[in-house]
Image (cartoon, rainbow, N blue to C red; front, side, top):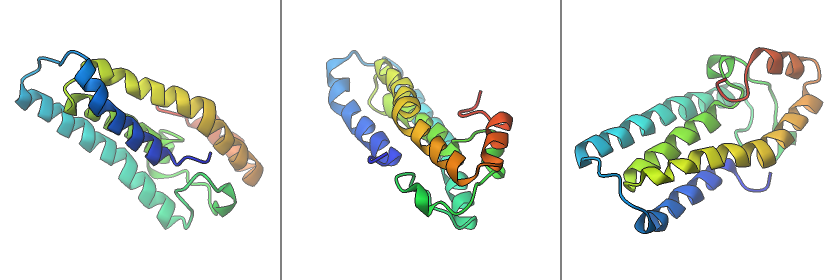
Length: 149
């Protein structure tokens, strides 16, 4: 948990630029392509921003690298449909990035982000939450999926 998830997303988005030069372009007209960028970018923001605001209102940190700073288990708002709405939003931003660089081949990046998060980030976060909130965390996990399903 040493690399902030937002930095992982930023690095993946930056990597898309040179990769797109090596891959065939989408052939999607620019207006439709930029419409998709706008749509997926906004959907991502609809997940990320309210989720971050929920953390701030609860007086807890959005930075998962230091679980000791966690002050509250947020279970309201978007956290009723996903235990990780910020990460869901990041996936939408990665989809927007693939459209921005005109390479549908790079849509593979968001599943790679999910695999990375499921393997390296989320298990450590969830273990920390289980330790910090031993009564509420298991109940929350039973009621709310890790992603959206």
